[in-house]
Length: 265
Length: 329
Image 1 (cartoon, each protein chain N blue to C red):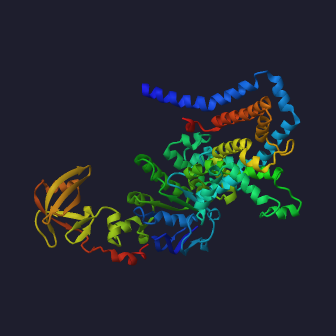
Image 2 (tube, chains in turn cyan, red):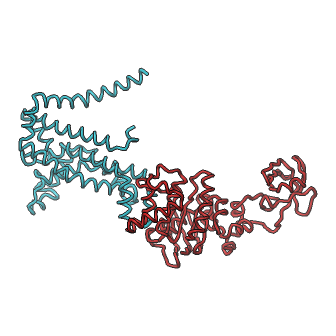
Image 3 (cartoon, one colour):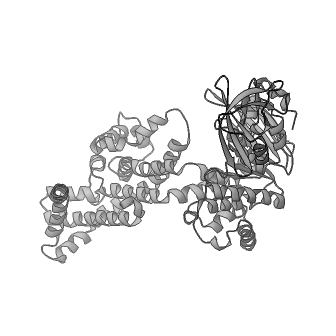
């Protein structure tokens, strides 16, 4: 019995020191002087714009990665093809590679001179680096794995008997997907979407390299926090951070609510 | 709809699942594919449904080549061993699935589903989810679902295999009656010879991907074409050089031509029948099945020596007879 208590104390202590304490500190510091300064920071046009950039990047990356993740999961679980193992491994690449490296790779790929895509795009008047396209690309890259990683085990467990039954009942491939497969994996998809969204909103490293961090133009919420700290505007940084943290907490709550009961226990 | 299977061969990697199978199934018949596990019976059924493609050979449905036809265009109903219930749908939506796919009017779907639920005795369960049904109920739901669009062929893959003995016996009966009512061409797969003999009009016996024999249940039992069929369909014991049915063994207190001298090891009375365990001079054990009155007339006791012979003296089964038998059906 004491041993079990000790185990619990260690687990809880670890969480409190490493996770809860910093989070609590941010909330405390933010509201230390009341709501007024917080509101001022958040209503600043540059801050509003930074949040807009983050949200637009997420709004593009999340649907794309959801579709890609479901397709990938279907291909990996249901099909046999050459390079399947490779695809399976590549999906995890964004988790394995530091976002800064991702940013650097995008930089090398798209810079105006001496890169693969940069000169051609520049010739057609399209600017990728230090503009919205680079931010979106970086955000997409880092949030690729989540939907596929959630859906793959669910699909494996599901098997394909229900789909075969639907086929013998007259359902086409398309009808089988919409009426049998998708409803069966919906919780995994939703869970994956929530994780993807959280990752997109929190992305810093890759975006920091390729966005150029131009105030009011290509600044995102996370790079804005960094800039504010660099400029000793700590209370501003707290205010933006608390919004991101609040979103993260919201995501956690959503996840707990959506996840089917038996998985929590 | 009649089914014609022509020279179908199927391999999974290096495993030969079906070896040049040819079989005709008449319109409106009730046929069992019988064989031990790994005999290829389920694979054959799945090929008829279009869930597997044969490596070579053809499937004809109503005389038309359907070998390359997708399952959804074959007009077959398929029932899986583990039900394959749509877990996210109610019983009503499960049963109505084939009709809703075909975009039938809501009212029509409703009426047809009610009618089918009545047929499978699940009327009170329309709004439940499959997880709230017992195994037997789920399988009845799966049957109703397979019948909803009035398929020309009903295919069942070990439909009662996952159910307990009592429910299995009930559903067998029920399938037999259903077939008399609906008269759809029905093929079911089973490894249980009793189930095949009891339910089907015709039984096709498979072993190691080969068709051993096709015929009415009585034909298979009385004239097995190979040692495999003899052993698989009903009990078989070795008497001297021959394989015979236990009930064919005659016991006498005196020697006669061809009779084998045996010692009685045990007598067990099983209701109207009795089982007598015997051992011959070489220590080979065999079992005879006698009617009670025969047993009483003989007045046998354990340890006594008697002479065993068998009625149809002609049968010397060997595996080589399989080809000749395929014409029996």
